[in-house]
Image (cartoon, rainbow, N blue to C red; front, side, top):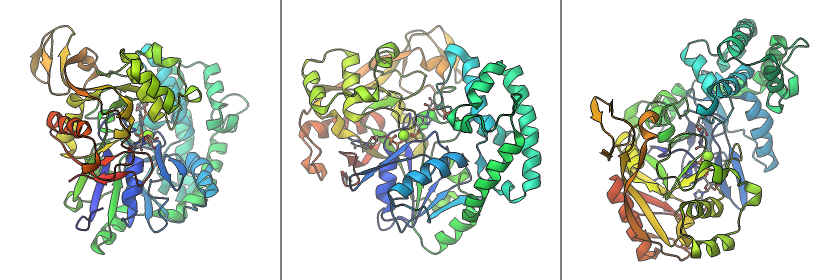
Length: 494
Ligand code: GDP
Ligand code: IMO
Ligand code: MG
């Protein structure tokens, strides 16, 4: 964080996985406090330092910096099981004890029925499914907005908490069967999965075992409640005391519930505005928002992706354990001349396989129409990640306009006709699914190793031309560039 700035935010500009974790970890070195404001264990943030690799979901990515306080803000949905039994245990293995982790008492908890509903809703959607992470995120936010969610503070009052659990168990069972249309067999199968403790929360006659759920959560409460704080007050006092605060976003703007590719989005505000509601920090405190963009697009899960390279069927045969080596990718790039191969090279060089689910990520050319949205909603300051991944590519493209190929309709108060050209991103899958690239700006690949560049001047001219193209087509200002996964592989540009 620069000397003058006291509060900055780092959020995703696209469909997630842009490298937010890497930059949060890096900025955390000069921050006193790191706060997560939204999302939950759908997030998978990678932090690489001293040859170690951390994969974080709930825990803010500043945790590897011993002097930094890390806070789970009120805007998140917290799964205590994932936090305590996976993340905190994994961190302990690399000698990170999480003593510097605090949690908002107002955070909503992910409960066992949320994961069941997530699965049941996806099955009910059939071929229109969202492709969620199945972590119960959407249903937990549904309860929050319906004002019936369970908050961490509720565990302070066991009887009040128990009443709520019993009511939810009853209502959610009805919902799973009658609204989502799940069968009893499916319910029992899902309740026996490892993330439901292999059936521990299921009664012998196949219902939610409210008493067992209450016991588990009260037990976890003993670990979490001592970390509980009023985050808005904590941050107010820290701000007054001149502490440096770093806000860590999860997911990305194109997955934002309001601004993303609805309905193929997550259930929270991943935009800069989410930092305010998710922490209680007032707007005037924030000095700068960085949106992290990667040098090409990725997406995991379903939903339209206009610049995608390769089809779902082509990609579905790939897996992380059959990942191609860097040398193999470099060799393949010499003869590549079809979309799927270009996309495959990006995926394998970068290891674009989901941090949370292991699913192969879809890859595509940089989409300036989509990334302009980040400039509109979050502001102009961009950190560009994964630039080194393009090192082997013979050519590069930036999509600058879409063609709408669907039937005549209206959108945002205007007529939209077949073959219309669009330069503003349509935030709805009803329209976006018919959008194809109309125009590309073409660039020659630099085809040399940039991972050892330590300043803008070190970059090849062709790389600089690509960066200028990104700025011109999106209206952004690239402030920082990253040329490798580890903490030090990054430098300021302006
Ligand atoms: P996040 O969800 O935005 O934090 O991103 P993820 O951690 O899910 O995915 C980003 C991936 O790219 C991780 O494997 C990072 O280690 C890696 N990464 C981030 N920045 C760079 C970079 O500049 N170059 C390379 N090669 N990898 C990067
Ligand atoms: P980070 O923070 C990439 C996607 C899912 C799915 C959609 C809805 O690591 O960038 P959800 O489980 O949230 O209801 O799924 O959102 N998704 C992400 N994709 N990175 C993430 O987080 C994501 N979190 C959710 O794949 O398409
Ligand atoms: Mg991720």
